[in-house]
Amino acid sequence: MMPRPGFVLCAALLLAFPAAADEQPRYNLVRLQAQESEPVSNDTMHVTLYAAGEQRDAAALADQINADMAWALDLAKRHDAVKVSTGDYRTWQVRQDNKMKGWQARQDLILESRDTRVLSQLTGSLQEKLQVDSMRFSVSAETRTRVENRLIEMALQAFKLRAGIIGNQLQANGYRIVDLNIGTFAQQPPVVYRSRGMAAAMESDMAVATEGGESDIQVTVSGTIELTLP
Image (tube, rainbow, N blue to C red; front, side, top):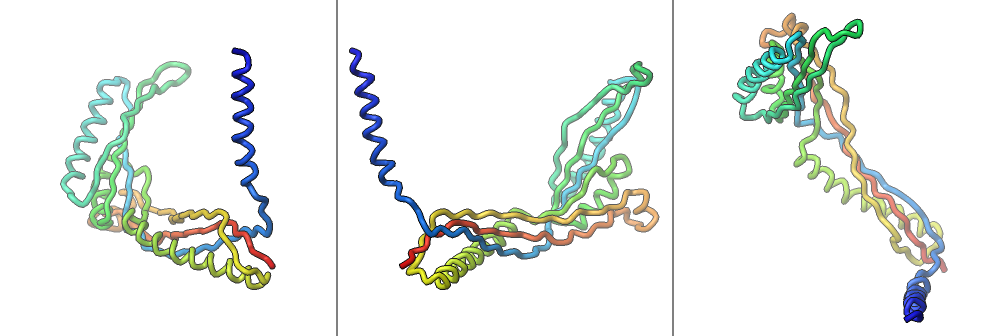
């Protein structure tokens, strides 16, 4: 039974040779890329607020956080245009002079809406008991997909145009695409917001002052072409 391993090895080698023989060397390779971009108005607002506290008794602290979150959820869910979710409840010890002083806890409230006016007013109201952790704007998935599809067509046309220019300048008979990659990216601006205390001095409706701005959506087509030179 000893010859069987030798037979398997020979068969593997015979199968490998045709694959290697089929790999023809490539010459006259050129890497290039084309990019298209478009500024798009941000149409979705995202806000994260949190309920937090500190007490000596962990159970009493949990009751406080739960009460604040229940109040906030009841207020937020009155708005059908706002998508509402909560984050994990987190608690940790507070120590001083290597002795436990008490407990701190926090839970996030995550809000999202395409109605920025409603969400900014809701955010101002929620700051009666919660604090704002972050705020940002983005382009909705539907809008981003529509813009990206249009930019992909434009970027592919630009890629073909550049490939043709290179081929013509080098007097090539033609070219073929060896590999092609398409990437998308959206650059979003940072957002500055005012806390409820500052807004209270300036706005009677307690709405958070916001400006959605624009995102720059980009599509990049990169790849390698092989020129057919005379």
